[in-house]
Length: 117
Image (tube, rainbow, N blue to C red; front, side):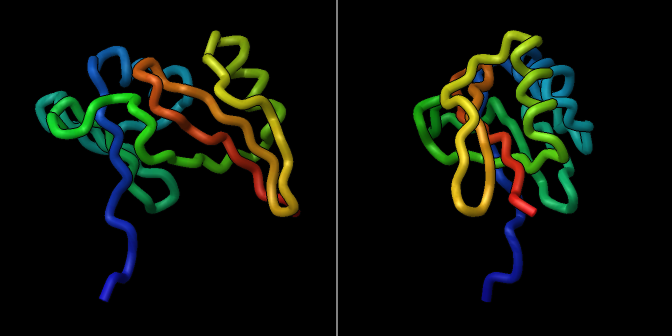
């Protein structure tokens, strides 16, 4: 029986460039680093990983999507815009949330998300 999600992972082509994006641009805090080939970030008890070890999966080929919840969507979008992040989809609304989609340097898509009150 499945009890939880162990981790989400994105393949990346260049670890230094990916870490700069995820740590400096998005502000994720490093949790673990195995030989600078597999890097993990803890986000509220869930693990998001990036790796250069995943040879079967190519970076940015429209695979899975991770969604990061933020406290203030408008502030997050403004900060990312100022940092030159490429937006795949501008801010939009659904009955349950507001969100925008950005791309990391490899083209992996990331949803920046805020649930409605």
